[in-house]
Length: 106
Image (cartoon, helix red, strand yellow):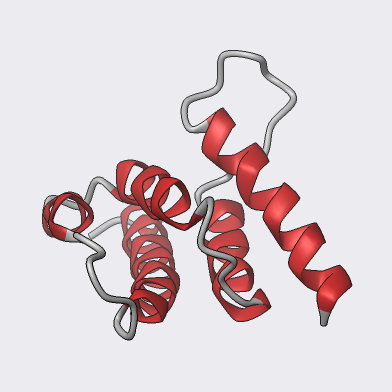
């Protein structure tokens, strides 16, 4: 396995760990359907899983810890960009807004 491939797999594992940690914040909440997110995670579609988690969390008032995990996942996937048509841009921007708001509350 090449060094680049090993680095990519390690990055995927770190991203997946952050997304899994963030997903755990939904466990105590009734009526939240994570099946689509789980399907994306099973197929290593980490960006799509990120989008789903942000969308699900948008109006839930989740704590800072959730948004910190999401922020780490976004940074690992390099989702923060000034490019207007960057994939996952809307979810990444939403993540940053929620992170700032939750940081201000803590």
